[in-house]
Amino acid sequence: MSYPGARGKATSLWLLPADESALDSELAKRLPARGWLCSHPGPVGLHEVHLHGCLLAALDCGGVQAFMPLPVGWTPGPQIPALDDLKTDGRASVAILQFLRSEVRTDERGEHFSAGRLAVRWFENEVGPELHATLSSEVGTAWAGLRAMTNSAKVQNGDGSTTGGMRIGTAAKTLVLGSRLPLTRGGWERLSLT
Image 1 (cartoon, rainbow, N blue to C red):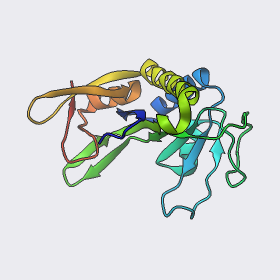
Image 2 (image 1 turned 135 degrees about the horizontal axis):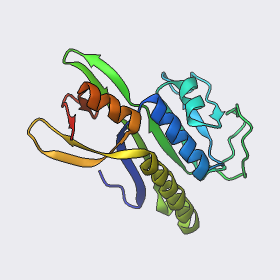
Image 3 (image 1 turned 180 degrees about the vertical axis):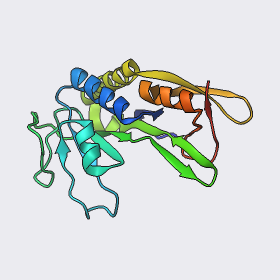
Image 4 (image 1 turned 135 degrees about the vertical axis):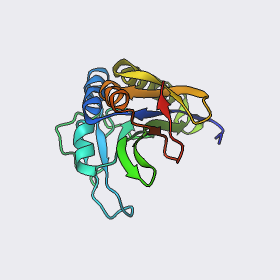
């Protein structure tokens, strides 16, 4: 689906906890003022949300996904306690980078490695040209960090065709190739790493 004036990126990725740690370290070097919001399952407003200094802390608190408010240095309101000593600059958040965790799952078709995601979107006409440039730069920096610590993941589907544009961490690649674990992108189709 296309949204007029929308800018953003998304990629499917397979990461194990060691890869998440490497991504977190890479983003800390490239975007030191970033913070991560934990995300708890359940109805909105039922769970308290916290601002964490690193991705792993946010995932440990929430479990499945975490959000990096953009621009980095964003100041949370009083309803979001900061659990780490984060430096903020008073700007409001206008976009969120979503990290959805990958996981090894088992269903009636057997064990498989389900993809996570890194995604962001904002509307250029709502943020103006200066903030749009800032967001574009920060997202580019985050994707450069992702590319620096992952490998391109070309996958083959059941009909033999190959698809690219996805990423896989070093630990996840070792697991998948060593165990011949099939990959999924959230559906029934089983993919194999080429």
